Each structure stands twice: as C-alpha cells, then as structure tokens.
Image (cartoon, rainbow over all chains, first blue to last red; front, side, top):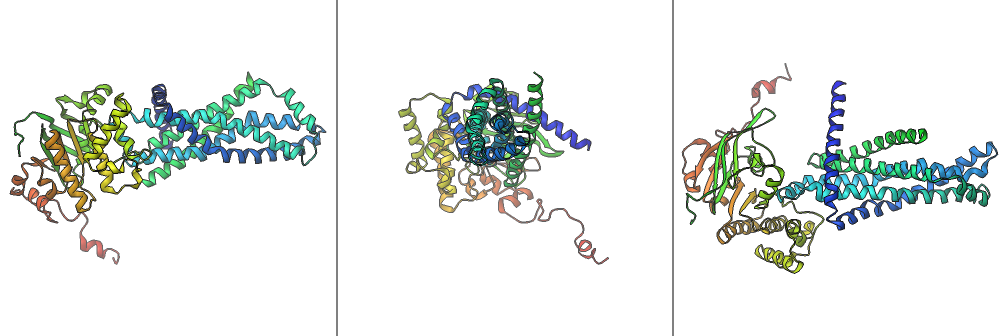
Length: 251
Length: 272
C-alpha cells in the first residue's frame, strides 16, 4: 500500500519534471513549423471521422433523453438550450478528450515508444539534437491545438444530432429549438467549454508523449505504455473536469 | 599499417569504475584510442561494450575514473558543450536507428538541417556525395522500411559521416549481415579511416573480421581490459581468457554453464 502510494508520487513528480522540460522546448520547436503542422494534421484531421461520428450519436441520444425528461415538466421547447449547454459545457470537451486519448494519444505513445525502441531517440541525442525539441514538443503542441478544434466540431455535429431527433423525430418546434438556444447560451458557457478542452488537450497530450518517451524499449513495453496513456488520460480528464466545473460554478 | 603508435589520444579512458544496481560493470578499465587509428573493443556479451559507448558519449556518468574525448572530461561537461562535442563524433548504431518517418535522403540530411543553415543546392550535393560513398545514391528516395539490414546500416553510416566527424564510433557493425554486406561494411570502415583519417572505435565480438583492419585491439573481461595490443599479439596471447575468446572455445574462464545447483540433486528432487 505504502509502496503503491510512493510509486504514484514518484510518477507524478516525473510527469511534472517532464512537463517543465517539454514546455521549455515548445518555443524553440516552433523553428520547425512544418513539423508542428504535420502533428496538428496527425492528431486533428485523423481523429475527425471518429469525433464527428460520436458527436452525432451523442447529440441524438441527448435529443431523446432530453425530450423525455423535459416533457415531464412541459418544457420540451427548452430542448435546444439543454442540448447545447450540455454539449458545449460538459459532454463536448470530455468525450472529445476521451476519444482523443484513444485515437491520437495511443498513436503518439506508440510512435514515440517505437522511436525509443529502435534507438532513434538516442541517435538524435548522439547527433546533438534534443529529441524533446524535435520529436516531443511538436506532438505536444499539435495535440493542444487540435483538441479545441475537435471539440468545436463535436459540439456542432452534436447540436445538429439533437435537432435531427428533437425536431425531426419527436416533434419539438424548430423555431423554439433554435431561438431559445440563441438567447440562453452565453459567452461564458462557450468560454467554459473552450478552457476545459484546452486543459484536457494539455493533459492528454502530455500523458501521451510522457508515456511514449519513457516506454520500456521493447514491444511489450510499448504496448503497456499505450495502455497507460489511455487509462491515465481518462482519469486525468475526468478529475480535471470536476475541478474545472466546480471552479466555474463558483465564479 | 601507417598510423604511429604514439599519435595523440582522441579517447582516453582512465581507471574507469561503473556499477549498475550493485553489479560492477567496469572495475578499473583503461583504454586509449589514438588519432587516425582503428581501435577495436572486443568482449563476450554482457561485458558492458554498449555501456562503454554510452559513457563515451556522456549519456551516463562513471562512478569514478575519467573518460576523456578530445581531451575533455565528458562527465564534467554541461549540456551545451557536450552537444558541441557530440557534433564532432559520428556514431553508427547496431540497427541503423534511421528516422522511420524520413526518406533515406532526409535521414542523411538530418544532422545538416539541424546544425547548419546551408543553402538547399549545397546541402543536396553534400548528401548525395555521402550516399555515393556508401553506394546508395540510387536509394535516396526510398523509405527506411524498404531497405535491407545491410543497406540501412550503410545509410546510417552516410548519416554518421555527413558532418565530417573526427571520431566515428561503431556499435556492433557486423552483427546480422550476410557475407557480402559484411565485406562492404568492413571495407567502408577501412576506407573512411584511411582516406579521411577518421579515428575509429569499433565495438564488436566478431574477432576475425575486425582483426583484419584494426590497429589496436582491446579485449574486455571482468570489467577491465584483459588484453591489449595488435590483433596478432592478441591471437598469440597465452592467457586462458584471451585464448578462449579469440578462438571461440565454448568452455574456459567464461564457463559454459550458468551457476546452478547440483545437477543430480535437482533432477532427483521431484521424487523425494
């Protein structure tokens, strides 16, 4: 028990140190804008299909569940607001982060882990090139930039999914669906979602590059690191989500 | 072979001690690689040959003793000067360690792009010249995944020499090569040494191959240099450890059997 706790503390410290090291290399890594663009494409564009698909389904479920709940109080016309607020403030950032960890995070970890296993990272160091600057920092930044964009797309598709079910299937009036959404959703709500998705982007990208960089240089080690990426990203995302939500509701 | 035995020492390892996890790897190692020579470092598996390379490059620090490269103690260097020193050293990894997301051309261009601001046409010519030297100019546009093991190692060699290093370190350059590729690599090591005057350190356990080209050989055993001298001197050495390694005898000072409980007792213990 004590040993588990000790290990957890050591790990947190090691992640924090790595975080500082990566942050220090972020600015110098902008010297290679092409690398950063490639990583935004990698993390962002390649997660697009899965994010859009899941956004659609989550929106459709929200339409059904929201309608079922709201009509008990005779306020089904508020479905648009409910779906939009639920997506923008909560479901959008969280589910996108979880999807990102599974799709982009794992591929980051295994890519960096394989570079470690095949001595590519050591070779860079021997060529006097800092692998944190050349390999890790662009991937980290790419993930942070991609996350809010993916979240925005998730939200938009989700709202249309809710509309598809709410207006198209169960018969909420289209005018009230959209007009209530327009009048009730405020800048504050959008900002909350944006800040959340940025924080999740930092957390998920950091865990992915950390696990890859510190992976045991074997096939088994890379596999384990990939698993750890998903687990710790998910836990971290939900923990951060609670803390951020509490902070926003307080302010 | 031409290089004089008293040429200046490029690498000087002095009374090196290094232990990991309580197990001693080096216990008073002395080793010198002189300018313009090919120095072979041989030894059975597990004698810390790769650890020695990591110590030479300043990736890990010795417990005591000194490792000097170009006269500088690598353990005392900060990151900046250490990186500056590494630019003067080329290293060939056992599996090539080519960047899997870059073409052969870009792999060789990698150190140039990282450390210089050469105009593109000049850079292109330099890279093509190095690829020509290893006979792979025709493979410039291929991906590392398309190369055979021997070709990958030649590309890695082109990359290792693209910055015109003064010292080249080879980690097990002969492992897993067919006889043709092996001959190619062997000749390349020798050509680079004689034509460019590059000091070379070759870590290997392929006695026969390296003995053909090395000026000076070290045999590692028990954490120190068990023998040193020209390959001919080592071959004629009388000590049992050297003799066993140079002639590839299965049993000797390095025992065939890993220490184990009594054979007979262990076989019979199930029945008891």
